Image (cartoon, rainbow over all chains, first blue to last red):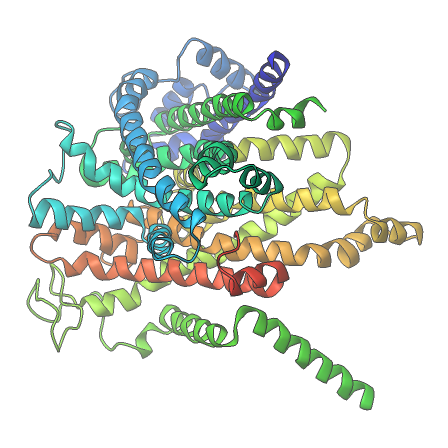
Length: 310
Length: 297
């Protein structure tokens, strides 16, 4: 087990370095003169462009720039925001909790809705509840979450006046954004759990368990579902990145000041240091969460560890 | 002559078998719907008369006989805008997927066939790309290239490269040790001709399956980018932009945002069914599943 954890930590390091290179490259891939592109909207003098280049360190060779960038990273220095003049790191860290809360709530919705529907569908394929689950999973994948957010707002905030349409005041303001963001992932989860259960039910060990006199509930909980847990957790880990990024549109719609809406504003304003910081932050969080997920799955299901050690 | 006739009959027979695998009726329905969408995207003027940016009457008029989908905040016909607004998102998703297919397959082949440093570099780059969510990659591209329809096309194209590259890389790893590839090499086939004549045809099915399932995701990504305001600028019609600007008038006029939303949903739904259909035609095991939906998918 220790070997597995150490190995998993080691392979995360080059990926994290790679993410830092991608974030670093964003400014260098801007066609033409990056400093001039970032000063769009005004007609900057050559002097202003040069000042900005010096401020961003663009006048130095790239390897020095990357070394400086990496060194800054180690100290939590991601540069300075163009718009506010504040440190990008503190801007991101102050907005991250709101996005984490929204993403966590969305994930909870996905699990609470998706897993039971998947279990019902997997245990009784073709039944009426399976059909209901399939309709939900098809709609969840097809309806764009940002439109769902508007439809929910129309129904529950504008017409029924049950929940607030915008803002971050209290628990009730979290419900609509979380359901809108989580719905599609509930659909994905329903499909996954359903198909895993159907597959598990065809395995020999289920027959053995039944032959030994285990009831349907025991076969489901102790055998079939247990084996469906680790792929489900892995899948959720892989979707976290999409949920964190998808939060952007939801935050814009509901006026939530989170990381996603901040990223969107910064892209529109060509506030490149913030974009770099946000990409780096989301990338790191995603890699680290999947690291934890892999270790967790390794604990639950020792078979996944074998891939590594053999 | 007879040989040709037999061959052509043979081809027709196998084509019929292939179509039957996906279900003939659903094939026809899908073909009609796809054709309709192509007409909407390419010749919007043939379906609706009128200028999508021109005011045709009172603002916020509810759907009725003269304006089936109502009018928006500036008195423009919503139906006309929905028909004209199909083009950017459809263009971005179809061309975007083409770009990611070509780039992803090339990268996957390079990673799978090259040895040593090059292969390692490609695979590490791919690991990093896979560590970033597709939408984040797309947003990053927009930050680099700027806004506009072209940049959405590029963004979608780049975002789905890793998906293709990973599949191709995996298959090449499996195929390069296959007997028929070894035999071709043994008979003196060069690297390039082995790739062109033996590897690519064997990969075609898998690539088509990935492409057909990625198209639905590409539509969603393109729609998200244009909803966030990174695509077409108003007053030009576009599903994403109209959806987001209509969102301001939910209370007064639900129809302004609802119809673009329905259009995006219908397109994603169609792309998913199309993907499943293509998948089931190309993959016999999936065809069995399509006929027996209770089997795992």
